[in-house]
Each structure stands twice: as C-alpha cells, then as structure tokens.
Length: 124
Image (cartoon, rainbow, N blue to C red):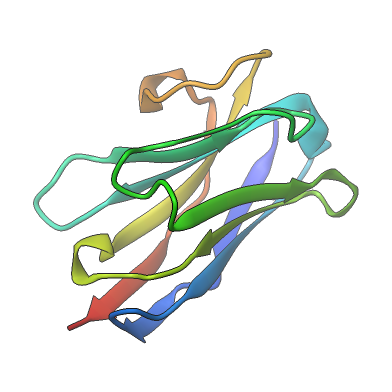
C-alpha cells in the first residue's frame, strides 16, 4: 500500500498562486499514475489533473488548463500541483490519488489510494 499526504493549501486572494504537494510513503511513487481531484462544498468530487508514472504525459480538466501544472519528482516520492491565476471557483478541498496501471483516468473510481485532502480557499 501507499500512504499519501497533501500539504500546501491555504487562503489566497484571487489572482494568486499556491503549490500543493503530495508526499507518498510505503511504496515508491513511480509505480503509480497520480491524480489531483477537488471537492467544493455541496458538490461532487471532480477531476483536476493526472500525470503518468514517468511524467511523460499530463492531462488537465478544461477549467484549470493553462493555469495549473501537475508534476512529480519520483526521487522525492512527491507529486505537485502548481496553481496560478486562482479564482474563487477554485475553492475546494484538494486530494491527491494514486492509481496502479499505466494510464491515467478522470474518474475517481479508478484510483486506489487517497490522501486526506488540503483546503484551498480563494477570496475575491
């Protein structure tokens, strides 16, 4: 099993930036495709981005494309989500997730391990 722990959330003004980190323990992160999801109050959890095991392929939700960047450092067993040009609609709890296999997925049902989440709040 792999354990995931997110950090880096907080309160930021609209237009600002945050970088989220997801540290893995238990097994090497390079075995997993990694994803970021988010859940706003009263809404279902939604896909944000995923990255292949080797960082060769990334995929983004349309709402964050061009503003967010997912990356990973397998040597540090850590995945990142750089978030720029934040707006209040980005307010949510952000989760990282690990998926066995070779391909990413936009469905949270296809991820095997989850972190506890980190709160991101963007003020107007």
